[in-house]
Length: 420
Image (cartoon, rainbow, N blue to C red; front, side, top):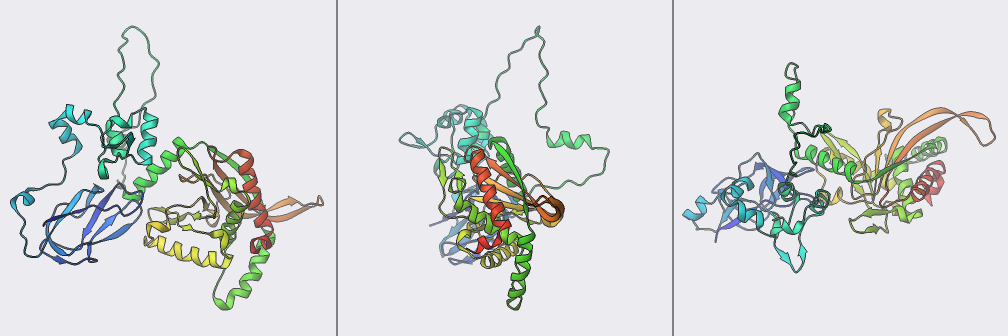
């Protein structure tokens, strides 16, 4: 019996992807575990394997096709000796939403989504967008798996509000909405430029960080840490670790200090979950890694339980595989807290954007020698590292955020505490 091969969800956040490359062609025999295609998700290009044995009867979605929704049929698998019948040959991928609406506008608009009791199935992002736009999820038809409502359904359901005409009354000029790509390009029509298409990663970064700045009430806490004791301690440790080929970075100490601080201030070790807060028991710390065309935030799980040396080795491995785009989704999804360090680029201080559902992110600047007044009132020169903690006020109040940052500074200024 012919079986449809569906576009897989290769990461928890994937709703659509690009079918980058077919590894098989029509007529090829495949076995369970054979590579069928390479699929570009919102974060990486991943291999898609066959689940069943059979013969590729027809490829429905061509290589290079963008924005293929999860669960869309992409190929047909036949059993040995089976031929593709006329009905299957004529089968096409689902029509675009616009074409379906054209054929039956009234029926599509009124068709309710599948429900179980009073529950409407929708992704967390779709629920947030519907709430922001004042839309009733019960009136939206879902196009995701099993009728689940996804972001595209909410976008399609949004109706522009009717604006009554007022010929006589003067109106205040409204600010212009977002410009279209063509209108922006027309501004620079007489200037040379290169147009760069957005890949899946750049689209995801744009969508998630726009959502973060629009929906998360950020506030910012700033402090500087004196690194002199840490730098001396690090030099001594690296000298002892040299025979083993290991070398600790300042960032390794920052990761450990944050993991320890999250245990000391448990109310800050939490994530936002729409209608509740999840307070976590272990310190899972995400660290931003810049790659060609974007960034990953691989997560070091149970960072509070690991030595600085172990954290260093794990971070090096995750960063190397992130740059090669070889991380599994489980290695970059999750975490309770994030670190973004631009100190190695000479940046002294900056404000980072919270990556939901995290409740905080620490922006780390470069260590700079500055004149400092010591405890005895004498002016000395010390290495100061500026840090900014971006905090989600829905989860963490000011006093809790201040306590968390104080614990981070304490760990960095007293590095022996990080070994306890």
